[in-house]
Amino acid sequence: MGKSIANLGFLVVVGMILTQCANRGTTTGGDKDETPPVIIKSTPENFSINFDANEIKIQFDEYVKLSNLQKQLIISPPMNIEPEIVPVGTASKVITIKLFDTLQPNTTYAFNFGESIADNNEGNLFPYYKYVFSTGNYIDSLSVSGIVSDALNKDVDERVAVLLYEVDSSFHDSILYKQKPKYIAVTDSASGFSLENIKKGSYLLAALKEENPNYTYQQKTDKIAYRKQFITVPSDTAYELKLFKESIDYSFKRARQASQNKIAFGYEGDGESMLINIISDVPDGFSSVITKEIEKDTLNYWYRPTLKADSLVFEVIREQSIDTAVVKIKEFESDSLVFKSLSSTLKLKDSYVISASTPLKNIDESKVRVMDKDSVFIKPKMVLNSIINSVVLDFDKTEKNSYDIQLLPGALTDFYGVANDTLNYKASTKLQSDYGNVRINISNGVYPLIVQITNDKGEVIESSLELNPSPIDFQDVSPGIYFLRAVFDTNQNGDYDTGNYLSKTQPERVSYASEPIEVRAGWDTIEEFVLAD
Image 1 (cartoon, one colour):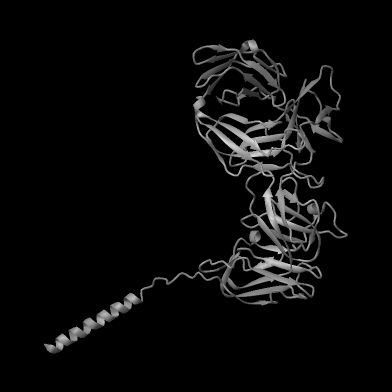
Image 2 (cartoon, rainbow, N blue to C red):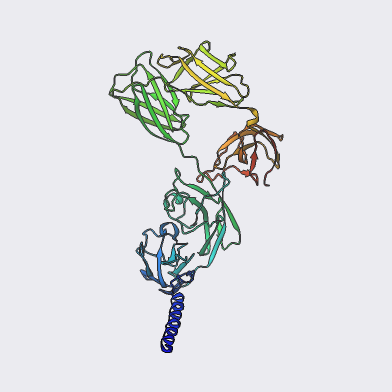
C-alpha cells in the first residue's frame, strides 16, 4: 500500500514537471525581429577611388529582398545603359550590381537605394543606403540643397527629380530635352532635396516631375522648375524651385473627315485662333463655319453644299505657321441636329445653357417660353455663343423656384437650315440660405490681382479680377472647405500665366492663405487674406 502511494506521488510530480516544461516550450514566436539587416562587406569597398570594376557585390548578414527598385533607386550621374541589379523577386544575402555603361573619368557615382532594401522575414528596412565610388583619385563631397514648391497648386507632387547640368563647353539650353543630367536627387516627404557628392563647378539647377521617368524633359506631360541664373558649387545657399506645367507649344496635328460635311482639325497648344482656308475649287454659294469641340483640342470645319471630290486641300494658318492639309473624302452619314442641356440646378446669377451638335445660325426668341412654378411667364434674353455652339438664356430667377423652358419648333435653326422640334427642359433654384457668402479683405496686395476660391483639387470655384484695393464679395457659394488663392497678374491680361524654360520666363506669382476656409449654409464669412511679401 505504501509503495503504491509512493509510486502515485512520483507520477504526479513527474506529470507536473512535464506540464510546466510543456508550458514553457509552447511556441509563441518570440519577440518580433525589428533589427534591419547589416552589411558584412562590399566588394569593391564603399567609397572606393580609382574604381574600374564592372561588378559590385554587397553582402548582408541575412536574406534581403529588393522592392519597387525602379522607383526607389537613384543613380547619380544617370547611366545611359542601365545596370543589372539582383536579386529581383527572390531573396538573397548578396545584392549584385553589374555595370554595362562606360564610366566617365574622374567622376563620383552614387547608388541611392532609397527604401528598396528590406530583410526577407519581417520586412525591416535598410533605409537610404548609398553606395559611392569614384573613377578618379578622390570622392567629390560638395552638395546642393533646397526645397521644391508648386507655382500654382498648394500641394507639391511627391518624388520630384532635382537635376544638375554641368555648364561646360558642351552645354546648351535644350540639354534638358536631350540629355540626362550630371547629378540627380529626389525630393523627400517634406519636398526638400539634397544633391551630394558633387564636384566644384557651375551648374544649371532644374527639377522635373515626369510622367514617364527618364530624366529628360517632355513638355506635353512633365512639370518643370528651373533657376534662371546658373549656380556655383560650393555654395551655402538653400535654393527654392517652383514647379509648373508649361503651356504646350502650338502645332497642327492632322485633319480628317468626321462626318459628311465636317472636317475635324486637331492641334496642340493654343490653336483656337487657327485660320482654316479651303484651297480646293468650290462652287458659287459655298459657305463654311468653324466651331470649337468642347474639351478637345479640335476645331470643326463645317461646309455646304456637299462637295463631290476624292479629297479636299486646306491651308491652316496661325501667326507665322502655315500648314497644308489634304483630307480624303468618302461617303459619310450627315450629323443630326441634337440638343443638350448643360445645366439644371441654377444659382440666381447663373445662365441656362443649351448646346447643339451642329452649328447654330439663328434664334427666334418669340418661340421660346420660360414659366415658373406659379405659371408666370418670364421673358428671357438669348445669346448665341458660336465658338462653343451653344445658346445662352438669361432670365430673372427667384429662390426656391422651378422653371419650365420650352422651345417651340423653329426657335433654333442650324447652319444647314434644320430647325428644332419642340424642346422641353426644366431648371430649378435653391433657397439662398442653402448657400454661404464670403467677403475677402486683402492685405499686401499688388494690383491687378486675380482672387480665387478653390477646392482641395485646385479647381476654381469662384474667381474675381481686382484692379484696386477693396473688399471682394463672393455670393452663393456652396457649403464646403475651400482655399483662398491670389494670382499676381503681372502682365495684366486677367489670366494666370505659366512659365517657359526656353524663353526664361517664370510663372506668375501665386499666394495662398495659410489656412482653409469653411463656407456654411446661411452664413456670411469674412476672411482676412494676408499675401506673403
